[in-house]
Amino acid sequence: MGPDYRLSRLITHSIRRHLVGSEQRWVFERPPQDWAPPPIERTSLYLHVPFCRHSCPYCPYTKVQYRESLVEPFTLAAIAEVDWWADAVGPAEITSVYIGGGTPTLALDSVARVLMRVRERFRLTGDICIETNPADVDDETVRRLHDMGVELVSVGVQSFQQEKLAMLGRDYAPDIAERALALLAGSDFASVNADIMFALPCQAAADVIADLARAAQLGADQLTTYPLFTFPYTAVGKYLRLAAVRMPDLRMRQAHYRAISGWCAQQGFERVSVWGFKRGTVPRYSSVTRDGYIGVGPGAGSHLSDGFVLNTFDLSSWTGAMRDGRGATALRMPFAGEMSGWWWLYWRFYDTRIPLDDLDAALGNDAPKARRWLRVVEQAGFAVRNGGRLELTERGAFWLHLAQNYFALNYVNTLWTQARREPWPRAVAI
Ligand code: SF4
Image 1 (cartoon, rainbow, N blue to C red):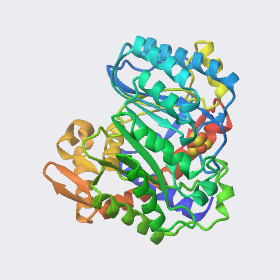
Image 2: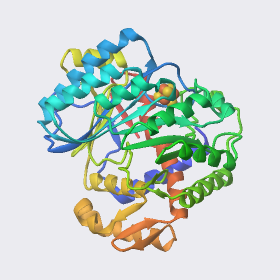
Image 3: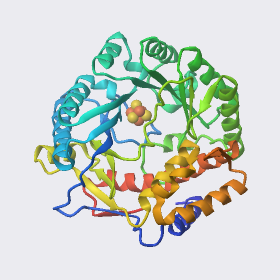
Protein backbone atom coordinates (compact mmCIF):
# COMPACT_ATOMS: atom_id res chain seq x y z
CA MET A 1 0.00 0.00 0.00
CA GLY A 2 1.54 3.28 -1.12
CA PRO A 3 1.58 6.70 0.57
CA ASP A 4 -1.33 7.88 -1.62
CA TYR A 5 -3.49 5.10 -0.29
CA ARG A 6 -2.50 5.74 3.35
CA LEU A 7 -3.09 9.48 2.96
CA SER A 8 -6.50 9.02 1.37
CA ARG A 9 -7.45 6.60 4.16
CA LEU A 10 -6.38 9.08 6.81
CA ILE A 11 -8.40 11.88 5.20
CA THR A 12 -11.57 9.85 4.68
CA HIS A 13 -11.39 8.39 8.20
CA SER A 14 -11.10 11.88 9.74
CA ILE A 15 -13.97 13.23 7.66
CA ARG A 16 -16.31 10.36 8.41
CA ARG A 17 -15.53 10.49 12.14
CA HIS A 18 -16.25 14.22 12.22
CA LEU A 19 -19.45 13.96 10.19
CA VAL A 20 -21.08 10.74 11.32
CA GLY A 21 -19.64 10.65 14.84
CA SER A 22 -17.53 8.19 16.79
CA GLU A 23 -20.43 5.89 17.69
CA GLN A 24 -20.57 4.56 14.12
CA ARG A 25 -18.35 1.46 13.83
CA TRP A 26 -17.00 1.05 10.31
CA VAL A 27 -16.81 -2.71 10.54
CA PHE A 28 -18.72 -5.35 8.63
CA GLU A 29 -19.19 -8.44 10.80
CA ARG A 30 -20.72 -11.85 10.45
CA PRO A 31 -24.34 -11.38 11.65
CA PRO A 32 -25.57 -13.36 14.67
CA GLN A 33 -27.35 -16.65 13.87
CA ASP A 34 -30.77 -15.24 14.79
CA TRP A 35 -30.32 -12.05 12.73
CA ALA A 36 -33.24 -11.15 10.47
CA PRO A 37 -33.77 -8.04 8.33
CA PRO A 38 -36.29 -5.45 9.58
CA PRO A 39 -39.75 -5.24 7.93
CA ILE A 40 -39.85 -3.13 4.76
CA GLU A 41 -42.76 -1.26 3.12
CA ARG A 42 -41.04 0.07 -0.01
CA THR A 43 -37.64 -0.68 -1.47
CA SER A 44 -35.73 -1.41 -4.68
CA LEU A 45 -34.32 -4.77 -5.69
CA TYR A 46 -30.93 -5.58 -7.18
CA LEU A 47 -30.34 -8.91 -8.95
CA HIS A 48 -26.72 -9.88 -9.54
CA VAL A 49 -26.08 -12.32 -12.41
CA PRO A 50 -22.46 -13.41 -11.94
CA PHE A 51 -21.61 -14.96 -15.31
CA CYS A 52 -19.11 -13.60 -17.82
CA ARG A 53 -17.73 -15.18 -20.96
CA HIS A 54 -14.29 -13.90 -20.10
CA SER A 55 -12.80 -11.71 -17.41
CA CYS A 56 -11.94 -8.08 -18.27
CA PRO A 57 -8.63 -7.34 -16.51
CA TYR A 58 -9.79 -4.11 -14.83
CA CYS A 59 -13.10 -5.47 -13.52
CA PRO A 60 -13.68 -5.60 -9.74
CA TYR A 61 -17.18 -7.14 -9.84
CA THR A 62 -18.21 -10.58 -8.61
CA LYS A 63 -18.24 -12.93 -11.56
CA VAL A 64 -17.40 -16.46 -12.64
CA GLN A 65 -16.62 -17.97 -16.00
CA TYR A 66 -19.93 -18.72 -17.76
CA ARG A 67 -20.85 -22.42 -17.96
CA GLU A 68 -24.32 -23.52 -18.92
CA SER A 69 -24.34 -26.06 -16.09
CA LEU A 70 -24.08 -23.24 -13.53
CA VAL A 71 -27.19 -21.41 -14.68
CA GLU A 72 -29.94 -23.70 -13.32
CA PRO A 73 -28.47 -23.90 -9.77
CA PHE A 74 -28.08 -20.09 -9.89
CA THR A 75 -31.71 -19.65 -10.94
CA LEU A 76 -33.06 -21.92 -8.21
CA ALA A 77 -30.92 -20.18 -5.58
CA ALA A 78 -32.00 -16.71 -6.77
CA ILE A 79 -35.67 -17.73 -6.63
CA ALA A 80 -35.07 -19.14 -3.13
CA GLU A 81 -33.46 -15.84 -2.13
CA VAL A 82 -36.45 -13.83 -3.39
CA ASP A 83 -38.61 -16.09 -1.18
CA TRP A 84 -36.20 -15.65 1.73
CA TRP A 85 -36.45 -11.85 1.50
CA ALA A 86 -40.25 -11.91 1.08
CA ASP A 87 -40.66 -14.18 4.12
CA ALA A 88 -38.35 -11.95 6.16
CA VAL A 89 -39.49 -8.43 5.23
CA GLY A 90 -43.07 -8.94 4.03
CA PRO A 91 -44.75 -8.23 0.67
CA ALA A 92 -43.03 -4.87 0.15
CA GLU A 93 -43.63 -2.53 -2.78
CA ILE A 94 -40.65 -2.80 -5.16
CA THR A 95 -40.17 0.61 -6.72
CA SER A 96 -37.41 -0.39 -9.15
CA VAL A 97 -35.47 -3.45 -10.19
CA TYR A 98 -31.88 -3.27 -11.35
CA ILE A 99 -30.33 -6.31 -13.01
CA GLY A 100 -26.54 -6.19 -13.20
CA GLY A 101 -23.56 -8.44 -13.17
CA GLY A 102 -21.57 -10.07 -14.49
CA THR A 103 -23.44 -10.31 -17.72
CA PRO A 104 -27.21 -10.67 -17.28
CA THR A 105 -27.69 -11.14 -21.04
CA LEU A 106 -25.94 -14.54 -20.76
CA ALA A 107 -28.83 -15.89 -18.66
CA LEU A 108 -32.03 -14.16 -19.75
CA ASP A 109 -34.30 -17.18 -19.19
CA SER A 110 -32.99 -17.31 -15.65
CA VAL A 111 -33.61 -13.58 -15.16
CA ALA A 112 -37.17 -13.97 -16.48
CA ARG A 113 -37.91 -16.74 -13.95
CA VAL A 114 -36.50 -14.74 -11.05
CA LEU A 115 -38.53 -11.69 -12.09
CA MET A 116 -41.65 -13.81 -12.21
CA ARG A 117 -41.03 -14.82 -8.60
CA VAL A 118 -40.43 -11.17 -7.64
CA ARG A 119 -43.83 -10.34 -9.12
CA GLU A 120 -45.47 -13.20 -7.21
CA ARG A 121 -43.96 -12.35 -3.83
CA PHE A 122 -43.76 -8.53 -3.91
CA ARG A 123 -45.74 -5.63 -5.38
CA LEU A 124 -43.60 -4.56 -8.32
CA THR A 125 -44.57 -1.00 -9.27
CA GLY A 126 -41.37 0.49 -10.72
CA ASP A 127 -39.14 0.27 -13.76
CA ILE A 128 -36.91 -2.68 -14.59
CA CYS A 129 -33.38 -1.75 -15.72
CA ILE A 130 -30.83 -4.17 -17.13
CA GLU A 131 -27.17 -4.13 -18.16
CA THR A 132 -26.37 -5.67 -21.54
CA ASN A 133 -23.15 -6.72 -23.19
CA PRO A 134 -22.79 -5.63 -26.85
CA ALA A 135 -21.72 -9.14 -27.85
CA ASP A 136 -25.08 -10.61 -26.74
CA VAL A 137 -27.53 -8.12 -28.21
CA ASP A 138 -29.62 -9.36 -31.14
CA ASP A 139 -33.31 -9.40 -32.12
CA GLU A 140 -33.98 -12.35 -29.84
CA THR A 141 -32.43 -10.49 -26.86
CA VAL A 142 -34.63 -7.49 -27.55
CA ARG A 143 -37.74 -9.66 -27.76
CA ARG A 144 -36.96 -11.36 -24.45
CA LEU A 145 -36.26 -8.07 -22.69
CA HIS A 146 -39.63 -6.71 -23.83
CA ASP A 147 -41.36 -9.95 -22.78
CA MET A 148 -40.02 -9.63 -19.24
CA GLY A 149 -41.10 -6.00 -18.98
CA VAL A 150 -37.68 -4.31 -19.11
CA GLU A 151 -38.03 -0.56 -19.76
CA LEU A 152 -34.51 0.81 -19.34
CA VAL A 153 -31.47 -0.74 -20.95
CA SER A 154 -27.80 0.02 -20.61
CA VAL A 155 -25.16 -1.23 -22.99
CA GLY A 156 -21.55 -1.50 -21.85
CA VAL A 157 -19.90 -0.01 -24.93
CA GLN A 158 -16.85 1.44 -23.09
CA SER A 159 -15.33 2.64 -26.38
CA PHE A 160 -15.90 2.45 -30.13
CA GLN A 161 -12.16 2.36 -30.75
CA GLN A 162 -10.52 -0.98 -31.41
CA GLU A 163 -7.25 -0.30 -29.60
CA LYS A 164 -9.10 0.87 -26.45
CA LEU A 165 -11.34 -2.19 -26.47
CA ALA A 166 -8.29 -4.41 -26.90
CA MET A 167 -6.48 -2.68 -24.04
CA LEU A 168 -9.52 -3.15 -21.78
CA GLY A 169 -9.73 -6.81 -22.76
CA ARG A 170 -13.26 -6.43 -24.18
CA ASP A 171 -14.13 -9.28 -26.49
CA TYR A 172 -16.04 -7.48 -29.26
CA ALA A 173 -15.15 -5.22 -32.16
CA PRO A 174 -16.42 -1.63 -32.49
CA ASP A 175 -18.97 -2.57 -35.17
CA ILE A 176 -20.57 -5.09 -32.76
CA ALA A 177 -20.98 -2.33 -30.15
CA GLU A 178 -22.41 0.01 -32.80
CA ARG A 179 -24.89 -2.58 -34.00
CA ALA A 180 -25.98 -3.43 -30.44
CA LEU A 181 -26.57 0.21 -29.49
CA ALA A 182 -28.45 1.01 -32.73
CA LEU A 183 -30.65 -2.05 -32.30
CA LEU A 184 -31.52 -1.24 -28.68
CA ALA A 185 -32.09 2.44 -29.46
CA GLY A 186 -34.52 1.52 -32.22
CA SER A 187 -36.48 -0.98 -30.14
CA ASP A 188 -38.95 1.08 -28.11
CA PHE A 189 -37.33 0.99 -24.70
CA ALA A 190 -38.12 3.96 -22.44
CA SER A 191 -34.42 4.82 -22.44
CA VAL A 192 -31.10 3.43 -23.67
CA ASN A 193 -27.91 4.28 -21.82
CA ALA A 194 -24.39 3.78 -23.16
CA ASP A 195 -21.42 3.37 -20.80
CA ILE A 196 -18.30 5.12 -22.09
CA MET A 197 -14.95 5.05 -20.28
CA PHE A 198 -12.51 7.91 -19.95
CA ALA A 199 -9.11 8.51 -18.32
CA LEU A 200 -7.81 5.42 -20.06
CA PRO A 201 -4.06 5.14 -20.60
CA CYS A 202 -3.05 6.81 -23.90
CA GLN A 203 -6.57 8.22 -24.45
CA ALA A 204 -6.98 11.83 -25.60
CA ALA A 205 -10.01 13.97 -24.68
CA ALA A 206 -10.88 13.99 -28.39
CA ASP A 207 -11.13 10.17 -28.30
CA VAL A 208 -13.71 10.32 -25.50
CA ILE A 209 -15.71 12.98 -27.32
CA ALA A 210 -15.65 10.90 -30.52
CA ASP A 211 -17.07 7.96 -28.52
CA LEU A 212 -19.80 10.10 -26.96
CA ALA A 213 -20.74 11.60 -30.33
CA ARG A 214 -20.98 8.15 -31.90
CA ALA A 215 -23.15 6.87 -29.02
CA ALA A 216 -25.50 9.84 -29.37
CA GLN A 217 -25.63 9.46 -33.14
CA LEU A 218 -26.60 5.80 -32.73
CA GLY A 219 -29.49 6.79 -30.47
CA ALA A 220 -28.32 6.64 -26.83
CA ASP A 221 -30.38 9.13 -24.81
CA GLN A 222 -28.30 8.64 -21.64
CA LEU A 223 -24.54 8.57 -21.36
CA THR A 224 -22.68 7.29 -18.34
CA THR A 225 -19.03 8.22 -18.44
CA TYR A 226 -16.71 6.75 -15.90
CA PRO A 227 -12.98 6.60 -15.36
CA LEU A 228 -10.92 3.48 -15.24
CA PHE A 229 -10.96 2.80 -11.52
CA THR A 230 -7.47 2.16 -10.32
CA PHE A 231 -7.61 -0.51 -7.67
CA PRO A 232 -3.85 -0.50 -7.24
CA TYR A 233 -2.99 -2.53 -4.18
CA THR A 234 -4.84 -5.79 -4.10
CA ALA A 235 -5.85 -8.72 -6.19
CA VAL A 236 -9.07 -7.03 -7.30
CA GLY A 237 -9.35 -7.91 -10.98
CA LYS A 238 -6.22 -8.52 -12.93
CA TYR A 239 -5.52 -4.85 -12.99
CA LEU A 240 -1.78 -5.31 -12.98
CA ARG A 241 -1.93 -6.17 -16.65
CA LEU A 242 -2.74 -2.51 -17.16
CA ALA A 243 -0.46 -1.09 -14.52
CA ALA A 244 2.57 -1.06 -16.74
CA VAL A 245 0.84 1.44 -19.01
CA ARG A 246 1.11 5.07 -17.98
CA MET A 247 -2.16 6.29 -16.48
CA PRO A 248 -3.43 9.80 -17.24
CA ASP A 249 -2.39 12.28 -14.56
CA LEU A 250 -4.75 14.57 -12.68
CA ARG A 251 -4.54 17.34 -15.30
CA MET A 252 -5.38 14.94 -18.08
CA ARG A 253 -8.24 13.54 -16.08
CA GLN A 254 -9.58 17.03 -15.45
CA ALA A 255 -9.24 17.86 -19.15
CA HIS A 256 -11.30 14.77 -20.05
CA TYR A 257 -13.91 15.63 -17.45
CA ARG A 258 -14.25 19.22 -18.72
CA ALA A 259 -14.40 18.11 -22.33
CA ILE A 260 -17.17 15.62 -21.51
CA SER A 261 -19.22 18.21 -19.59
CA GLY A 262 -18.77 20.84 -22.30
CA TRP A 263 -19.72 18.50 -25.12
CA CYS A 264 -22.77 17.15 -23.27
CA ALA A 265 -24.03 20.67 -22.48
CA GLN A 266 -23.58 21.68 -26.13
CA GLN A 267 -25.47 18.63 -27.38
CA GLY A 268 -28.41 19.03 -25.00
CA PHE A 269 -27.45 16.30 -22.53
CA GLU A 270 -28.27 17.49 -19.01
CA ARG A 271 -26.05 16.36 -16.14
CA VAL A 272 -27.96 13.98 -13.82
CA SER A 273 -25.06 12.72 -11.72
CA VAL A 274 -21.33 13.18 -11.29
CA TRP A 275 -20.80 10.85 -14.25
CA GLY A 276 -24.20 10.66 -15.97
CA PHE A 277 -26.02 12.76 -18.57
CA LYS A 278 -29.40 12.42 -20.21
CA ARG A 279 -31.30 14.04 -23.06
CA GLY A 280 -34.97 14.99 -22.97
CA THR A 281 -37.56 13.73 -20.54
CA VAL A 282 -36.66 10.03 -20.52
CA PRO A 283 -36.66 8.35 -17.09
CA ARG A 284 -33.25 8.39 -15.49
CA TYR A 285 -31.14 5.25 -15.74
CA SER A 286 -29.26 4.70 -12.50
CA SER A 287 -28.02 1.76 -10.51
CA VAL A 288 -26.67 3.22 -7.34
CA THR A 289 -28.52 6.15 -5.86
CA ARG A 290 -31.53 4.29 -4.51
CA ASP A 291 -32.14 5.01 -0.86
CA GLY A 292 -32.95 1.43 0.08
CA TYR A 293 -32.60 -1.87 -1.74
CA ILE A 294 -32.45 -5.59 -1.21
CA GLY A 295 -29.86 -7.63 -3.06
CA VAL A 296 -30.27 -11.05 -4.64
CA GLY A 297 -27.28 -13.04 -5.90
CA PRO A 298 -23.70 -13.76 -4.89
CA GLY A 299 -21.96 -10.64 -3.60
CA ALA A 300 -25.18 -8.59 -3.74
CA GLY A 301 -25.42 -5.87 -1.12
CA SER A 302 -28.56 -4.58 0.58
CA HIS A 303 -29.27 -1.20 2.14
CA LEU A 304 -31.77 -1.72 4.93
CA SER A 305 -33.18 0.80 7.39
CA ASP A 306 -30.79 -0.37 10.12
CA GLY A 307 -27.61 -1.10 8.16
CA PHE A 308 -25.84 -2.55 5.16
CA VAL A 309 -25.61 -6.27 4.54
CA LEU A 310 -23.60 -8.19 1.99
CA ASN A 311 -24.13 -11.68 0.59
CA THR A 312 -21.30 -14.16 0.38
CA PHE A 313 -19.33 -13.57 -2.83
CA ASP A 314 -18.63 -17.23 -3.50
CA LEU A 315 -21.13 -18.68 -5.98
CA SER A 316 -21.18 -22.23 -4.57
CA SER A 317 -21.39 -20.99 -0.95
CA TRP A 318 -24.26 -18.70 -1.92
CA THR A 319 -26.05 -21.46 -3.85
CA GLY A 320 -25.57 -23.90 -0.94
CA ALA A 321 -26.82 -21.39 1.65
CA MET A 322 -29.98 -20.70 -0.34
CA ARG A 323 -30.56 -24.40 -1.00
CA ASP A 324 -30.39 -25.03 2.76
CA GLY A 325 -32.75 -22.09 3.47
CA ARG A 326 -30.14 -20.34 5.64
CA GLY A 327 -29.96 -17.00 3.85
CA ALA A 328 -26.70 -15.90 2.27
CA THR A 329 -25.87 -12.82 4.37
CA ALA A 330 -22.14 -12.95 5.09
CA LEU A 331 -21.49 -9.50 6.56
CA ARG A 332 -23.44 -6.72 8.18
CA MET A 333 -22.60 -3.15 9.26
CA PRO A 334 -25.34 -1.73 11.53
CA PHE A 335 -26.06 2.00 11.42
CA ALA A 336 -25.50 4.18 14.47
CA GLY A 337 -26.57 7.80 15.00
CA GLU A 338 -27.61 9.51 11.77
CA MET A 339 -25.51 7.29 9.49
CA SER A 340 -28.49 6.55 7.27
CA GLY A 341 -29.02 10.28 6.70
CA TRP A 342 -25.34 10.89 5.87
CA TRP A 343 -25.52 8.05 3.37
CA TRP A 344 -28.57 9.77 1.85
CA LEU A 345 -26.59 13.04 1.61
CA TYR A 346 -23.62 11.26 0.00
CA TRP A 347 -25.85 10.09 -2.83
CA ARG A 348 -27.46 13.52 -3.24
CA PHE A 349 -23.91 14.80 -3.85
CA TYR A 350 -23.56 12.05 -6.44
CA ASP A 351 -26.77 13.39 -8.03
CA THR A 352 -25.04 16.84 -7.98
CA ARG A 353 -28.24 18.32 -6.47
CA ILE A 354 -29.04 18.55 -2.78
CA PRO A 355 -32.69 19.32 -1.86
CA LEU A 356 -32.16 21.58 1.15
CA ASP A 357 -35.74 21.26 2.39
CA ASP A 358 -35.24 17.50 2.88
CA LEU A 359 -32.20 17.84 5.16
CA ASP A 360 -34.14 17.89 8.45
CA ALA A 361 -36.14 14.79 7.61
CA ALA A 362 -33.08 12.90 6.39
CA LEU A 363 -30.48 13.94 8.95
CA GLY A 364 -32.49 14.67 12.10
CA ASN A 365 -30.13 15.86 14.86
CA ASP A 366 -27.23 16.15 12.44
CA ALA A 367 -29.06 18.51 10.04
CA PRO A 368 -27.42 21.69 11.51
CA LYS A 369 -23.97 20.11 11.14
CA ALA A 370 -24.78 19.13 7.56
CA ARG A 371 -25.92 22.71 6.83
CA ARG A 372 -22.61 24.09 8.15
CA TRP A 373 -20.70 21.73 5.84
CA LEU A 374 -22.85 22.65 2.89
CA ARG A 375 -22.12 26.35 3.53
CA VAL A 376 -18.38 25.56 3.36
CA VAL A 377 -18.94 23.67 0.10
CA GLU A 378 -20.82 26.67 -1.29
CA GLN A 379 -18.22 29.21 -0.15
CA ALA A 380 -15.46 27.13 -1.75
CA GLY A 381 -17.24 27.51 -5.10
CA PHE A 382 -18.11 23.81 -5.32
CA ALA A 383 -21.86 24.47 -5.31
CA VAL A 384 -24.40 27.22 -5.92
CA ARG A 385 -27.92 27.73 -4.65
CA ASN A 386 -30.77 27.38 -7.10
CA GLY A 387 -34.15 27.85 -5.39
CA GLY A 388 -34.45 25.20 -2.69
CA ARG A 389 -31.51 23.22 -4.03
CA LEU A 390 -27.76 23.34 -3.77
CA GLU A 391 -26.24 22.37 -7.12
CA LEU A 392 -22.65 21.32 -7.67
CA THR A 393 -20.64 23.48 -10.01
CA GLU A 394 -18.44 21.95 -12.68
CA ARG A 395 -15.48 22.23 -10.32
CA GLY A 396 -17.46 20.66 -7.47
CA ALA A 397 -18.55 17.78 -9.69
CA PHE A 398 -14.94 17.12 -10.74
CA TRP A 399 -13.60 17.03 -7.20
CA LEU A 400 -16.48 14.86 -6.11
CA HIS A 401 -15.66 12.47 -8.92
CA LEU A 402 -12.14 12.23 -7.50
CA ALA A 403 -13.46 11.79 -3.96
CA GLN A 404 -15.63 8.93 -5.17
CA ASN A 405 -12.60 7.31 -6.73
CA TYR A 406 -10.93 7.41 -3.32
CA PHE A 407 -14.11 6.14 -1.71
CA ALA A 408 -13.99 3.15 -4.04
CA LEU A 409 -10.34 2.58 -3.25
CA ASN A 410 -10.72 2.86 0.47
CA TYR A 411 -13.95 1.12 1.23
CA VAL A 412 -15.27 -0.92 -1.67
CA ASN A 413 -11.91 -2.44 -2.46
CA THR A 414 -11.09 -3.25 1.16
CA LEU A 415 -14.46 -4.88 1.67
CA TRP A 416 -14.62 -6.72 -1.65
CA THR A 417 -11.04 -7.99 -1.47
CA GLN A 418 -11.67 -9.64 1.89
CA ALA A 419 -15.10 -10.90 0.89
CA ARG A 420 -13.58 -12.44 -2.22
CA ARG A 421 -10.83 -14.15 -0.21
CA GLU A 422 -13.15 -16.06 2.16
CA PRO A 423 -16.82 -16.92 1.65
CA TRP A 424 -17.78 -16.15 5.27
CA PRO A 425 -15.28 -13.65 6.73
CA ARG A 426 -15.51 -12.99 10.45
CA ALA A 427 -15.13 -9.20 10.16
CA VAL A 428 -13.86 -6.58 7.74
CA ALA A 429 -12.89 -3.12 8.99
CA ILE A 430 -13.18 -0.46 6.28
S1 SF4 B 1 -16.51 -5.64 -17.03
FE1 SF4 B 1 -18.48 -6.70 -17.28
S2 SF4 B 1 -18.09 -8.26 -18.86
FE2 SF4 B 1 -16.06 -7.61 -18.10
S3 SF4 B 1 -15.59 -9.09 -16.47
FE3 SF4 B 1 -16.58 -7.32 -15.50
S4 SF4 B 1 -18.73 -7.84 -15.34
FE4 SF4 B 1 -17.79 -9.26 -16.85
